Image (tube, rainbow, N blue to C red; front, side, top):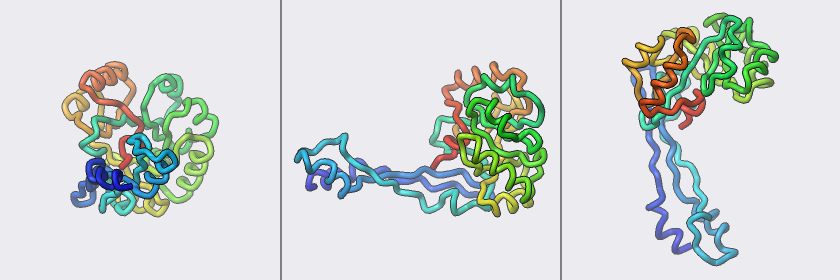
Length: 230
């Protein structure tokens, strides 16, 4: 216990607060510190200090997404060398999407079925309401389908521009509203790409060129939930 206590400050990582400007938010990052009691319990049987047996507990920032649901999420944290590609599915484009990795889909209500989710090979999926128009009934139905059939929880709505109605309706369902900082295709991405970018593609044209460009700049493409993880 004395040895664990003597090195605890060296292993502490302080949290990073979210950046809030007006009604927008960029998520922060949680920190960590050594859990003294649990670390001691892990080591006391052997009676030897082992670094690989240290147990940590999270330190959360004072400003988090969960206490700022009334804000639009506009990016992932700037310290993450990651970006998220989003696409709205409101037509029968399943074949073009099946083999695309790390793309997050927002599916319009008419296409959001268990069968269609199964066809998309475990991609991260959220509702796009009635082609971008959200209401209580649609969210109730769509969220139930997503929770049943997809690998993720239905916690994000998507807006192309600020819309108080979307923010209010989705907040009532305990959901966040994502407002991408890049909307377009290759040229918009090339001119605006940065750490934490949330990119909404207009179409799937040149998708291979786009992903190759993003990778060439050293960015990792991840699902939306991973990008926004604090």
